[in-house]
Amino acid sequence: MSHADRPPESILPPPAFPDPPEQLFDEESGAPKLGTYFGPFRRIDLSPAVARLGRAEAFSRHKRWFYTAISTDEIWIGAAIVDTGYAANAFAYVSSHERGVLAVTSHLGVPGLGCRVGDLPEEGADARFRSLDALFRLRRREGSTAYELVVDTKPLQVWATIETARAPWPLSAVARPLGGEVNVTEKRALCDVRGEARVGGTRYLLDGGLGGMDYTQGLLPRMTAWRWAYMLGRTDSGVRVAMNLVEGFNGPVECGVWLGRRLYAVGEGRFEFDRAEPTRPWRVTTTCGAVDLRFEAVGLHAEKRDLVLVRSEFVQPVGRFFGTVRVGDREVEIDGVPGVVEDQSVRW
Image (tube, rainbow, N blue to C red; front, side, top):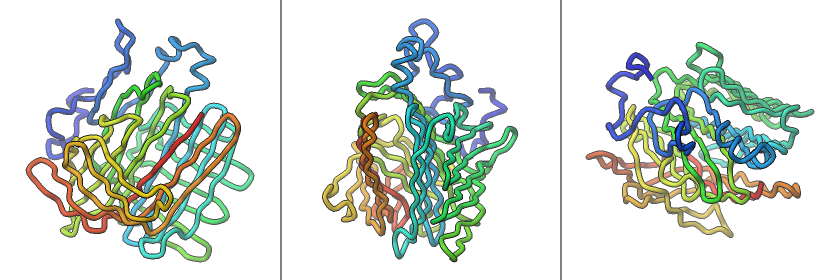
């Protein structure tokens, strides 16, 4: 990545973050270049690992998804397109910060024919899902700095532009999950949003909201589980703040906090919650002690599927975070910042 491609100095993180590698694998050893990076991946090429595993084994392990979040003063939107190689699904929901989930839609599809998540997380990105009763699409055209999100289903519709031009650069990571070959992820946050969502006869303007994305592609273990937290909003003083934490799966390499235009690494997430009643408060912390938050749910999106080859169960409460985050030499009060937590277990 050339110096000319770097963001202005005002949005650079601490120097511990290197640029993402142009090649994800070492040419001599063939090992993935594990670590946390500051900046976008131009393309995800897992072909060296595919060749090592063999095409049949790689096909069964190859998973890709795009998750998009939008946060406004009124609502939270979550939307995902998932391609597992031999199965596909998409879901979206709209949740009010006061009244909980207003509408949810979830669909199964056929990879290749009705679903595709590409290898480009940035310019040229194109993820789409189509079935008889649903259309999902997230794309970023060549030469554009903005993603376009469309969700067109009977329960809800979303048309949004998620602009990266003024956003901090993403947290990017290369990991090797236990039992897996390699996993690559790029987390974006604090992007400017404009557009609208419709639930029934109610229209919600998204202008002035904040958006973020999780692009993930990897050759994963047959059994995969994680706990995840994602926060997207503003402090009481108006400073933009976001957080991505995970426990398990990729581990600490994808854990970070954005404050304004800066990105700070934090330790791996730790989650305390009642699995039998996931809408009860969660405690979310990190191994380094920088994050100490309480999550209070206002709604819940949950799915349980048994498709023989694929078995998944996850809960994704949506609500608000309260507590403190310490980054650099600052302690930041988090008072009702919107977000989600998740407990997921999948056999694929």
